[in-house]
Length: 226
Ligand code: NAD
Image 1 (cartoon, rainbow, N blue to C red):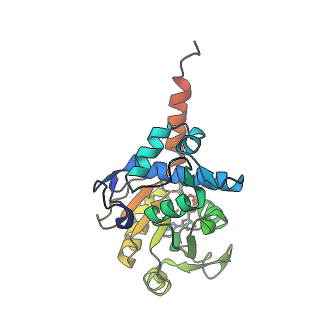
Image 2: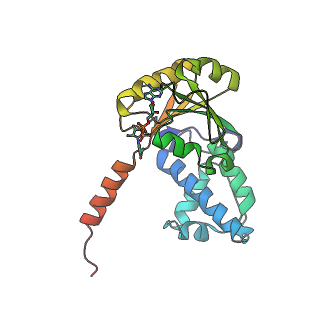
């Protein structure tokens, strides 16, 4: 995982501390998701209580988290949902399109290429790469698949900033090194291995198996209801 603290968005951070705990940034994504649900359900405004309720957070927690980034909402009115969505997207940097490369088009890579949700959240997978030449030269879910050697040129030509790594664990460091050398700024790694990358490249690991382990621990250690 990359650095656990983030600098707040300069446009909203005049009076705020210089660093924001990673947990706060994680909760922003949850607030954003909840806001989309509220908007879909016809809500134009919301409150910190309502926003936190479904997520299991207290209203004070929601207000404290948002206060890292400025002043939002109005007393007696609450937050306008569309304004808060725009503000959180600006803070997260997802108020614009991010161009993404997929490395590895096996089972997981193909499934991710088929996921339409990335597009609506501002992530556009513009090219995929694989070492298996039987998979290159075709389009999967509309995304062209190239040999790995084409990566530097495609990153340049397509202005790719982020890479998704969906290769076997034994190949993940190599794939990530190639992404770094090609010039991407961030990597989301699905392989069950910790990557060793330069500080200038942000990276996040996703591993459903470790999440399942956490779930098992929680279930196994659940105390009986009093
Ligand atoms: P897969 O074997 O079906 O596909 C891997 C693909 O990567 C193949 O097409 C292969 O040709 C390609 N490849 C191998 N080395 C490469 C390299 N150096 N550069 C580019 N492409 C390369 O595997 P899968 O089932 O799709 O799984 C992919 C990865 O995702 C594995 O590491 C797996 O453990 C992991 N995984 C993670 C999760 C999760 O929760 N994060 C879930 C499932 C799988």
